[in-house]
Structure formats: structure tokens, C-alpha cells
Image (cartoon, rainbow, N blue to C red; front, side, top):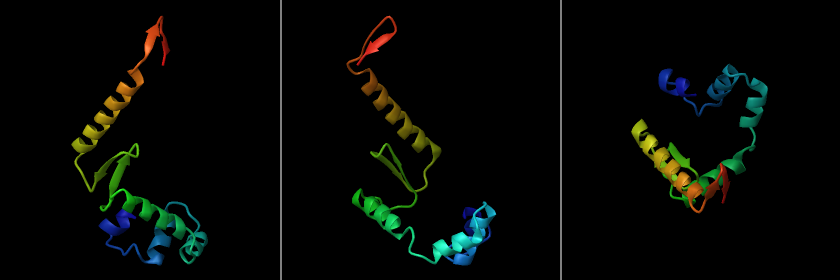
Amino acid sequence: MLRAYFTEGLNISDPDVLVACATEVGFDAGEVRAFLDSDAGHGEVMEDLAQAAAVGITAVPTFVFNGQWSVPGAQDIDVFERVLERLLAKEAAQLTDGQVCVDDVCDV
């Protein structure tokens, strides 16, 4: 879809374009067309939109880490590295908090 939109300039809201994209990666054209012509998936999409709105997500893409940290929009790799480093440090602190280790055996 990215290639269709950004490279080929195709309208990815056109069902024919979506079917073509799906068949390129191995989906059955008839099944894809039937899905697009139905209401299948509508509930899930609406639920995802409601969850995003509930936590203040307003940009696409938005990347959510551990359900607690979000990075909105297109960002440099440095931003993702800092978020991941902070999450790892936080998790490491939680893992070692209160641990007692004797002879390579740890009680939590």
C-alpha cells in the first residue's frame, strides 16, 4: 500500500486498488472484494478509533509502547531509541527492586 500510494500515486481508498494490493501479497481477490463490500471489521475499526481518542491520540502514525508511552507522527530514530532506553531502564529497575540473590538463585 505504501508503494501504491507514495510511489505509484494510486488512490488507496479505491476498492480496486486495495484488491490489487492484497492480491500482490497473496490474498484471494474474491475474498478481499467480499470483505470490502461488507461491514466486516467495522466494529473493530470503530473500537480502535474510540480507544485512540480516549488516550489522546490525534496523529497517524502514533506508536504506543507498553500501553504507556506514545510517540506521535514520523520521528527520527533517536526518539525511538530514547523511548526504548527509558522503558528498558524502568523495567530493569522494577525487576531488581526487592530482589535477593544468593548462589545464582533470586527471590522476588
